[in-house]
Length: 392
Image 1 (spheres, rainbow, N blue to C red):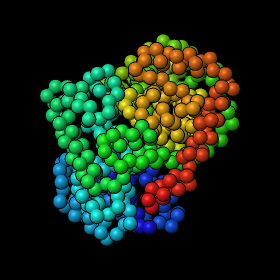
Image 2: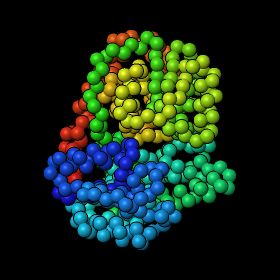
Image 3: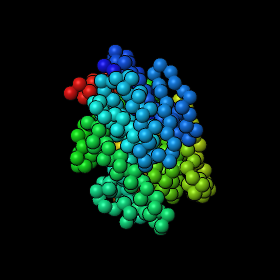
Image 4: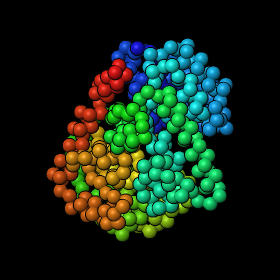
């Protein structure tokens, strides 16, 4: 089978890693695979100069993000018709989505949905002016009322709303199926009228070499979400400032100036218990899991199916997460701990539990999580599920 994979960037995290794993899996199983991208890496200048036997990069001016770009469309269409794919698998599409979707017409196309962006102009799935309460996307009719502030905010929201709705219509018209990693997003996209199927993400994280050597006696927590407010890390840090029994190391991008300033204030009040370690590469992050007893994923936004949780479970570190998005499914059946941003006492209860947790209870949680991911999210299981979908 000839399969064309389309994703915005060639290099990165999350979606980019899944595309790489998908391409590797499909190639190993005898499929001919080509990857089409529209930029090399997030934050880098868009460079169309990179091309090899498995990748092609085509760029589009940023001004065409919410417009149809005829030149961009023709270049994509030329690649599609030249490769003649039996199936097209779309991932993230930010550059002129109308052009990309239209270029896929007449070909069997599915799309892997990585986040809430297709249904929410902020991509977060929360009401920014309503204490970050959850919502179900634009059908809640709350975008302008609950997420825009002032004239500039309203104009910005309007532009994002137009781009989202245009992408929504073209996706409805030219994409046959949506593949959603979580049951939560599968159900919501079905509610919006899509033909949606659940396809849990795979993980390439190496099997843990840790033999349950951690002790939760004095919990040291890590978070790999960086300082961006939507990841909820700084909000979580504020909640545990008064609890001297736990420490927290924050790893990842520094976010904006306000985020970094807030982090500095929190750290200065914590007497060294809360610290920001900065960005580390993937390999180093995987090694750091063994230094901590708990991984915290305190997202305020509705994360679809957090890869970091899968990686933590594979590395036998107990995961604590907010009960938003797909995290609840991953940590179900005693595979981790959940708290709710909608309950003021929830974090305190989780902290009380981990400070009194026995080694046996800790090991029982991480073992259950490890066995689940190893059986549910491995490459062979993922390929079998994907192959059934592509052939159905």
